[in-house]
Image (cartoon, rainbow, N blue to C red):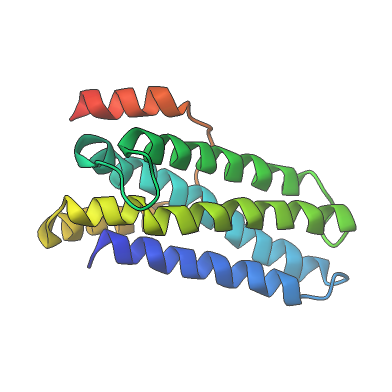
Length: 173
């Protein structure tokens, strides 16, 4: 088990659920609510798990990868993205499922999430892999999987200040 693979698996599930929403008839409110409800819980739990078990290592050991200007830029952007995704997901909840406004809000959440996943897959994950052993990725994967299982019904979505997050993780290391 590797935390990076678990993150990629979650990303695939998120993409799948956004795709399913696009295929549900807009008059099938019960199905839209159900699929969105699962996706919302996954988005929130996934972000929190990354912030607990993935990004702390990137803060302590990372140097920046891909097109990131460095570790600080990479992690600040990821935490900002998580906040944007949380806020976009909260906006979906303010609209009536099946309406144009609801679909527009879902589209905005999908755009924010898709941008984040692409950056994370070429920056943070590359940085993480370069600075951890397979054994470390396995141990982190167990923590990530246990957190995901424990909070299958979601977590409270709380925005974080990227600078404060980085400082706290650097200090904890």
